[in-house]
Length: 190
Image 1 (cartoon, rainbow, N blue to C red):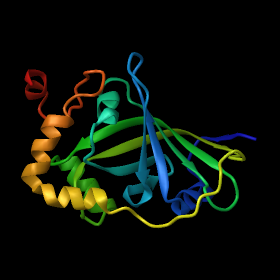
Image 2: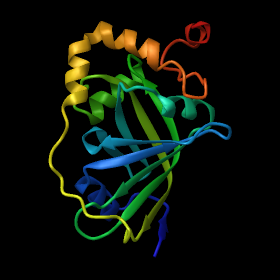
Image 3: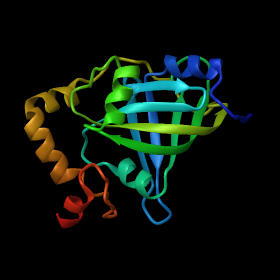
């Protein structure tokens, strides 16, 4: 049933490009496991061994905190339409903070230089294992469209409001770990 691959093959890329949602999972040895749904409009396959997604401001930033300490990251895609398939990308992740040169370069080269409203970082996954499995137990769902609630919320907050929100809600994980989205010295004093 399950098959393992050392890289993202063309058929894997085609499967990923057909999906509308994926899930990012991360943890440290001592933290809660975090699993977050993401829209594939923010995802890019960078190479046979790398993927990235533009991460938007949310109520927390568990992935950032986990990547700083542990680095393990898994992205999971599952077919909700068509043939049953689950595909996981395993590897080590890192967060590119908004405003850094590396963030700007990746944004320019893979996102046409355009940030989605509310962008706070780009999460990069260096893939060391691809696994596919049957997905026979995944139910069918019909795609009805994208939600625009997060974009409307971020637009209403504006740049200053988003910055204040991130400083209030995105500096620490549920387990109290620094997310690194801000200067570490500042994050440790708040």
